[in-house]
Length: 226
Image (tube, rainbow, N blue to C red; front, side, top):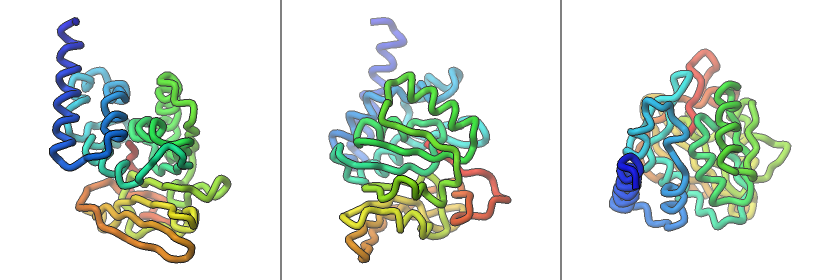
């Protein structure tokens, strides 16, 4: 095995061990993190750091999230492979690729067109045929295909956008979203049963703001994706 490949394998093994130690227990999520090549979603200059457990910069001042955060958010969706999922904030496409391995179909919305185009190309090259990337205001969701079994938001909102809540399936639809001030939020999981909503706080996180009509004002920087 070439030295670079051996280093990559050891780095992946270490990352998976770290995620286990941090409390990730869903084996399907851990397998997806192991198998999705995170180094494909960053620049060549950062490829050697792709398997470290921290966020990395991508274009347009955005980031590819820390693997632990990606894994924790994905685990909170409780996917079994039958779900129709909406992702808000495609970004690099890394989180999208993780979802594509765990859900039946994924619609991902990105407001920055060049990021959407780049992510779509990478996802296509990886064989993620169950993903559709759309350029739109993600804070409004995508009502044309609602309802969704699961919705994941990869940017911080002042409160859960009403449109996203309304687009959840009434039969146990799950929304995972960072909520709170711009400089620090709590990751919240909302589950819908009919017209009843149950909310659980997962833990503190720090995301850039969700920009849009039901997020933060458009005068702020555009939101991050995964």
